Amino acid sequence: MNNIPWWGYVILAGLAWGTYVPIIFYGGTELSTKPGTIGGRLASILCVGGAYFVLGVVVPVLIMSFGGEGTKPSWKSTGLVFSALAGVAGAVGAICVIFASKAAVDAAKAEGVNPATYRVYIAPLIFALAPAINTLLSLVWHPKVGDPWHFGFEVPGWKLPVGILFVAIGTFLVLKSKEDMEAAKGGPKPPAPVVEPGPAPATGS
Image 1 (spheres, helix red, strand yellow):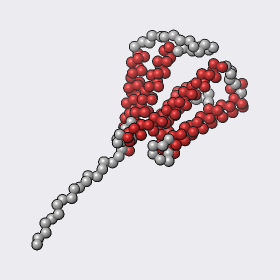
Image 2: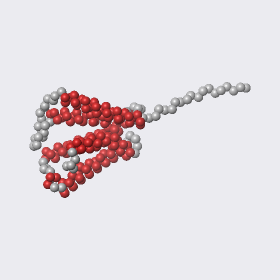
Image 3: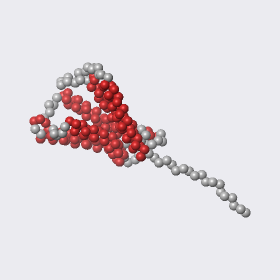
């Protein structure tokens, strides 16, 4: 894996996160027994947890067990706690995506509009909000080895807020455009016009 350049990992991460929302929504839909129930969503969470367990537990344990000296970690409490918190954040985000999709579809159906009306906003908002929060957090939190609670505000130049704004707007518009196209394809067909019967023709005597 050391032969993969840094930008290769960036591309792989983008592919993984970029396909997550539509894949998990479709998977939950297929696993649902009846519309409006959460059984399929819970099954989706179970599948995500199983994948996390294999890739995040089994594979690292095997590598640390059979790898060389460079695969042995330093089991520090701060590292364990914050790494676990990162896992919690990732799991909570995955669960929220799953239930956001269901809630958006249910809300649209309750209002009698296209089921994808509100769901189209989920991915654009998530992927526009996440980098903005990431950047803002990095402005005030500067953890160091052995000192996780190191804070200090650094005044950014004008490029940072403008860049965040452009990235958020661009990400939102790109994903919203994609979701709009999908919603248009899957929208309900308009009802056929009802033809009122005309008066019966008069008959001669």
